[in-house]
Structure formats: C-alpha cells, structure tokens
Length: 501
Ligand SMILES: Cc1ncc(COP(=O)(O)O)c(C=O)c1O
Image (cartoon, rainbow, N blue to C red; front, side, top):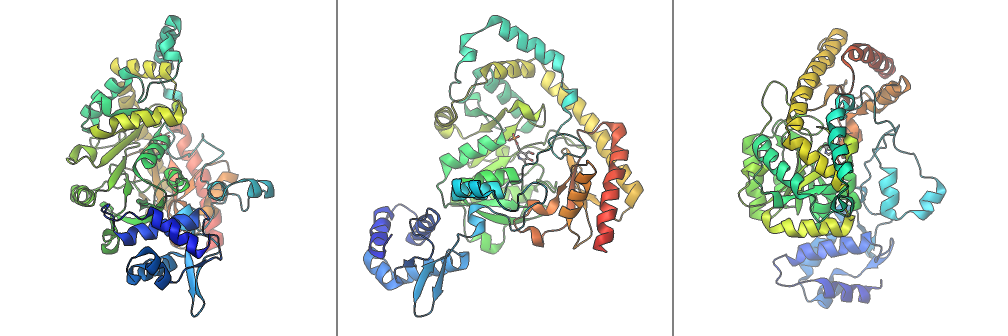
C-alpha cells in the first residue's frame, strides 16, 4: 500500500466521536495493516507531518503512535530516512513463545507446510503446546477416565437410541439442548454460586471453543487481552490465532496482579483462572476479585473466567465463582466436563450476560453448526438423576488420596529440597526445580523413561526468564503406581540436574 493509499485507508476507518480516542484507533489500525501485510515488511510509512495533515489530526498523536509501534517492534525508524515496517511482526502479537518446548514443538516446519500455511497458521503450528501423549503417568490435567460410571451412561445412552428421536439426531438449535441448559443452571447456581438462567448458558465443545466464541463476538483483531503469566498454552493459542494482542500480566499469591502501567492501558478482555490459577494453583483473593470487577466496570472490559477444575478442592469447600460477585455483567464464565467426567466427551459451556445470550446462541450455531444433542440429552439426565455430583464426590476423595501419595513420594525422595506448590486443588501439582535448571531437559529425560510431565517454563510468556519446575498430574495414575513412577521421574530429574550441576 502506498503512502497516499494508506492515508485513504485510515481515513475511511477512523471514527471520530465513537468514544474511542483517535490515538488508540490509529494505533490499532496500523497494527492491523502491518499484521495483515497491507503494509508489507520494509515498506515506508508516511511522515508524521504528512499523515497528520492528510487525516486532519494532531501531529503529536501520530508521533506518539509511531513511537509506540517502534517500542512494540512493528516499525523501526532510521534518522533522516523515515519510518519503516519491521521485517517480521513481533512474536507476542502472533503468538510464538520465545523458546520452543522440546518434545512437542518442531524446530522448523517441513518446507511444504512452511510454504502452504498462512503466517498465523505457521506460527500456531510452530508454537503448538499439544502433546502426542494424552494418557499415562504423570499426564497433567487428565482425570481418571477408567472410573467413569460407564454402566449408568450406557443405560441412558441406550434409552435414547431405542427411542430414536429425530430432533436429537439433527443439528443443535443455538445454545444447546434445553434440558442440559436447565440441569446445568441448577448445578452452577448451587455448586459454583453462578448467577444465571438456563437461557444464559451456551453449550460448546469445551473451554477452547467457548473462549474462541467469546473472543470472536466481543473483540476485533488487534485488541488487547490480558492473560495471566503463566497461563494455559491451549487458550493462549486460541487467542493468538484470533489476532488478539496478549499482554501477559504477572501473578502473585493473590492471583493476577496488574502493575500501575498495566492498569493505565485498559484491555478489551482479560482471561483469568480465579478459583485455581493455572498452572500455579493459587486462589484469587476477594480484594483482587473486587478490584478486577470494579476496574472492568469502569473501563468496560470483559473478564473471561476460566473455571476449569475447581470442583476438585481438597481440605476445603470449592470456592464461589467470580461471576457470582459481578453486578454489572462484565464476566463471561466458562467451564467444562473435561475434568469432571472425561476430556473426550467434548462438552463445555459458557454463561453470558442475559443481554448477550441470544447473540451467543445464534453465533454458536452459525459458526460451528453444532450437534451431539443425543449426548447432551444423556448428560442432562445423568446430572438430573444425581450421578454427576456423586461421581465428583467419589473422584474428589480418590484424587485427594493420590495427591497425598505423590506428596509423600516426593518428600521421601527429596525432603524439602524440591518443594511442591498448587496442590490444594485440581489434578496436578507443580514441583519446583533449582533456579537456573532447564525444566525442558528434565521433561525430555522423563519422557525417555515413559513418564509425561510438562515443564513449567513453557507456560510463561518468556520461558527463558521463567522459574524452573514440573507439572505433575496425579489424577490418572493408579494409587499403587504413583510411588514407583515418581522414582522413575526422580531418576530423570537427578540425571539431568547432575549435568546441570
Ligand atoms: C486452565 C485450562 N483451561 C481450559 C482447559 C481445556 O478445557 P477443554 O478441554 O474444555 O477445552 C484446560 C485443560 O487442561 C486447562 O488447563
């Protein structure tokens, strides 16, 4: 795009008097133009004087936007020569963590894929965190699917197949099956203190899809989203591929902890795990929850609350949701049956403010053309007959015992030398490794011994600066295998740390 064309392109898109400062609009539009390659790498952008004149805005505004884009790595300026689009867009925007995880991330893409994939597609694949292994000790985040009450489920399933109702075998009406939305509303109100009617519930295929839908409906490419640092790689990929700019926000023992500088730049959205920070495990304090809700209200930002595994809390009752404290309708609550029942079920849900419910239901049907209604009918009855809550109760006891067995095995081998954190809830804990050690090497050494753990550093925006540790999932490991498997893991740790020493 030539300079004069760029001015026209911008002039058509800048909206005066729409409540958004011109500075912010111009910044976002230029980012978009660079990311979409309307402004190709190496091209010269007009001088601030010329652009200000052509757009009829202050030169200071343009200068400030250019300075910001230089800081973010979109453009560079050469004294006397002008300002040029950088050769590659900054990684943070399109989603490549700065160091690859060894066993899951290819060093380079095969040349054919490199040529065929779009920029965002290639970056998604090169930065993918998904593992080829999804079962076995100590796979984090996976429940014990062998304990699922298969007999009850197949009885209900058979009942629906025998009746063969056409309405359960066709496409889903937007939002999912009414009986499941009713059963879920009851469950979420009583167990998670979520304030909702059945109409506010939108059934999806899980949290990944819920976040995707929320982001598509509530933001535009280039908008900023706050994510916790560290955070779950899966939703981070969903956000990046949607073209959002992630701003990683540090967490402390009270949860997400935005700095004064962060607070000075309100995002469009934020994504938080208040009941059980992923992956470190802390609970967001009430003071922090109130602060966040008030900030979101004042700045009209959306908070996506990812409540992925809070049913499993050991030693205290599950904590109430952030959504239950929200009085101004800023929270989008997302949850899943992936941890409570089994991940392959692929059923999750969003709870959205009443005013948005119809739009979300329509968009979900429009974009994803959903089905699985027979499965949803079975699940609704499974919940209504009480099997869901009794399964959760049973599994909570079992996971609590497994967690303790793992803690004992770790203490037996290492004493206090390698402390574990985040084990009060959920399906995994984090074992800290000595500062400066490479947790990716340890994870690779463990995998060679057939043990799956994930390196903590991979969950941070900048893995090379992150603390070293391992995510160890205990939920899917039979009790009697936990201690021997931990010994095998410890052999991998010791072998790697000796090299490190
Ligand atoms: C924090 C967090 N959110 C979401 C998910 C995935 O949820 P779903 O399987 O429903 O897409 C996970 C899976 O491990 C997770 O750890």
